[in-house]
Image (cartoon, rainbow, N blue to C red; front, side, top):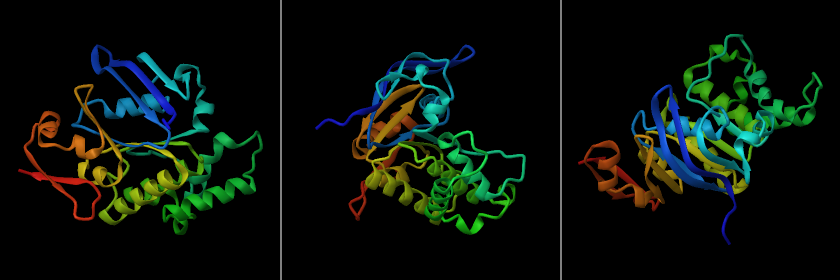
Length: 260
């Protein structure tokens, strides 16, 4: 049985002023995909992700979400189904962690000024998943970078999204919480068929968790497939301009690379 597509992208192009960033890329993201998007700085990875999130709409080409043009899907309707976790979240007011996570429930709330029992339940569940429940009364602005990122993930999960878009989600996390973060994401993908698209520079971490990898360079897709088919010395030299050796993991979870 062929999986249904969540996104279908055709000849997607985007430029900042006169500088091209995406140069006619085409692909499809399917229900239940776990995609790692890799490539050097300036390849267009974050721009592509923001288009999928509905944050950049001045693109050329076609992007469909669940069979409908993304340009016709309102921000509110998209937020009920798609959650986006950026690299950094800047907050001026000293909201508590609990308040920050409950903000993730906004797309599902009516005009009521009060959080429902379901809102509170989903927020607490998200905080337990991300190991942030003990931070619930602290001010978000008082947290470390790694703690903030886990709280932002909790807020995204409180949305109950079908699609989770992650832009360098573990950049501020220590090794323990990087693994914990991706363990959570993997569980959501496997148990709830949540579609995951994650931008990352950590190719080895991506290969351990993702089942599909898309490599970008200069606004184009260089390779797309299972991580083992993308992580070849030839592809990696083309993408990153470095020579590497590729080895199979002893636990059977894909490959890993080291400089040659």
